[in-house]
Length: 238
Image (cartoon, rainbow, N blue to C red; front, side):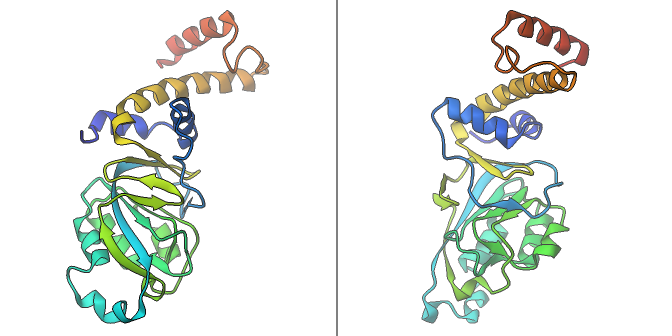
C-alpha cells in the first residue's frame, strides 16, 4: 500500500528516536542505519519510500569510465527512475573510500522531486550537496569515483544499508540524528503512535524544565501525570 499523504505528514513531525522506540516495542532493534549522518542536520525531516541501488565490489575490466556511456547503466538508470517523493537508498558496502554519487547526480534527484538520498558510503562534492534543497545522508566525504571500488549492479531490490535491511517501499525517515527504516506495513500505525508519543514527550519536557522530577513522570507511573498531561493537551491543542 503506497505511503499516504496523511502518514507522510505525521512522520515529518516526529523524531527518529521516537520511531526507534516504537519499533523496539514491536521487537525491531536494527532499524536505525549505522554510521550514516546528515550533510546538513538543519534540513527538514526527510520522509519517503525506499528506492534502492546496490553496488558490489568492482571488477576492473567491467568498470571503466566508458560504462557511463550506457544509458541503461544501473547508477544512471536509478537516478532517472527513482520516483518523485521517494528516497534513494544506496548500498555502498559500508565503504566510503569511493563516492556513491556526486553533486550532479544528487542535483538531478532534487530537480526530479526525490525526497532524499541515503548511502552507507560517501558522496563526492559533499559541500555542494549539503547546500542543495534535498536531504542527504552519508558516512563521510569521498572524492574518488565509485568506479574505483564499486560496481552498480541492481536497482529496486532488497539491500543492506549500514547493516540495516531495506526493502523497496519501506519508509525512510531522516532527521538530524540519522535515518530510520520503517517496514512498509507498519508505517501508518507507527506514525499515529509516534505523534502521540511526541505529544507526551513534549509535555514531559515542559514539566522537567519547570523543575519537576522524572520519577512518576517519565514513564507515567503516577495518576497525577496522566491528569496533568490531559490538561496540558487541552491547553496546547495537542
